[in-house]
Image 1: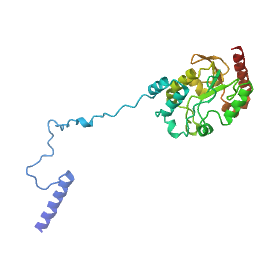
Image 2: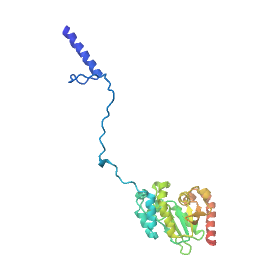
Image 3: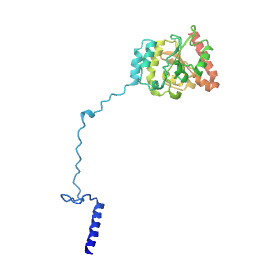
Image 4: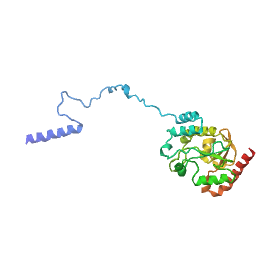
Length: 258
């Protein structure tokens, strides 16, 4: 009877020890688990090896690289080739073709649109879809055309590659493409610029608000410039074609008096 009582008492003590956190039954020396050391000694940190230093190259400044590449181009063909080699714009990865220009270089009028759409991406030329067809009709109404030897126009876009799903250009995309656009204008040598759409105004004038800006002659790239509605906007909002016609007449008068 006495031995049975001793067994259960010893077992209860053992379970109590386990609950207190005991993990070993016998140690070489007694451990006072209630003793708090005066100071906690932090483990020494091993010095970082030299090989662990981050020596990965910094991402290049896309605007600076674009500026250098654009400045080096001495002809429009060289500028197109420089754009083809420029790999810092992600739009290039998803585009089928580089959309550089159309029309006749050296024309008095240079039209700057926003970005290629699906049709332009497939054809590799700006303004060839429905909006482009409307643009051709608008130009023909005042005696201009991209293929007219006597009254040609020259056409390009701010972005040479189509944005996914025709989304709006991003500020960083405009910033890195702007040096190419400015050099494009220098090499094309137009007498005046027609700025088509909000994002073209952002690139060349540093501001948007085409409803407010349209029809008012201003300066861009040190040249006379006329902001106008984008033909795609006219297709969606035919009620503003009257304002677009007034802008075309203003352009015609400027060329006549030029």
